[in-house]
Length: 163
Image 1 (cartoon, rainbow, N blue to C red):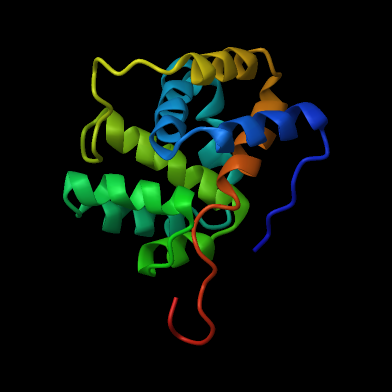
Image 2 (cartoon, rainbow, N blue to C red):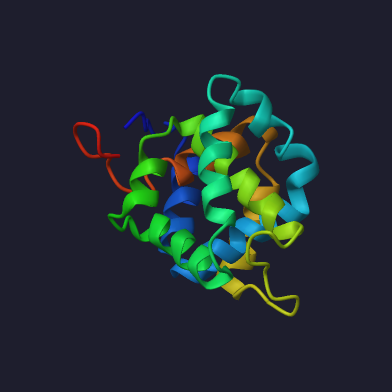
């Protein structure tokens, strides 16, 4: 695992608050971040992952073939660090590739190849406060926050040929 947490205490506090939300709130908050801040954040994800965009795309293509319920369960499994084939594939990716993968999931949600967010969903007050705080952080620190958030997700890859 290549995860190294940012030393900035403000970023660590935001990541801890993010991880303190229940799983579905974490997914919702990540979606709202994509929707509200995607124009500035999303160009950085593909550009930052020039080493292995095919890896993120490969896993995304497998996930988009699942039913919407299975796609949602997969996202929950990543956050919960469930040990299964897909979460181990995710766990084997670099931190930046993981960020790109979540970007692709958000794009898929937008075009409904991935289970979309319910249109009437409202963030909890706790998640909304965190979103407002994240909006105030400068761009580079936002990227560090998201990388620190997505990096520990998934499961450790297995030794040998099995992912």
